[in-house]
Image 1 (cartoon, one colour):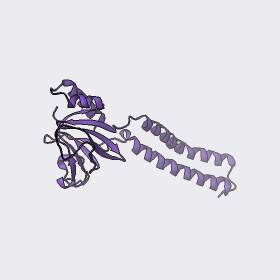
Image 2 (cartoon, rainbow, N blue to C red):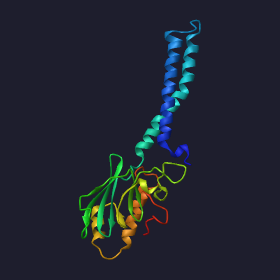
Image 3 (tube, one colour):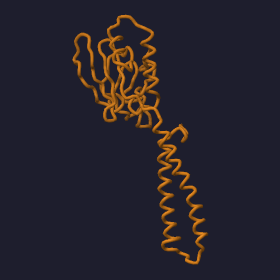
Image 4 (cartoon, rainbow, N blue to C red):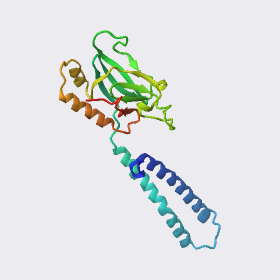
Length: 217
């Protein structure tokens, strides 16, 4: 389980909540101490001290909001597109409106899916021996939300590609691989680079690790 220090968005939500709560309390204190004082005989100095003491935790969480927001803005953006090469096709993989979309941009021979065909029947994409679109629900265990394609019931699977040959960040590399008859080590290196950029916590892409689905390089 991740620690709170590793979840900046969760920290930002908590800091924001306590900031709003603290500001509401401060406004309430100002009203009850200055605008409509509940104890008019209380000295002005004591009221000011009381407000300053109460403002310390609020200012701390407000600072937390600022620091965490800066941290989130500096975080590297998740990979939004890459190219997948199979024996017969090249697919441009993109995230569009929060969902993975596969578009065939090259083809060898005949296929029922022509160039330009778009596959978008899933909210997540499993990347392994094949690219498989799926809905991360209906897990075979107690948890319904399931990102591991091996644990997702087949009724939640969408379209899939032929076996994957390599992955690339650049279109020209994908076409070079597509038309090359021999296998080069650099294709493996570039594929690993794509997988590294996707990482383990991508919201739309998930890397298959089960032996039956894992991409073997």
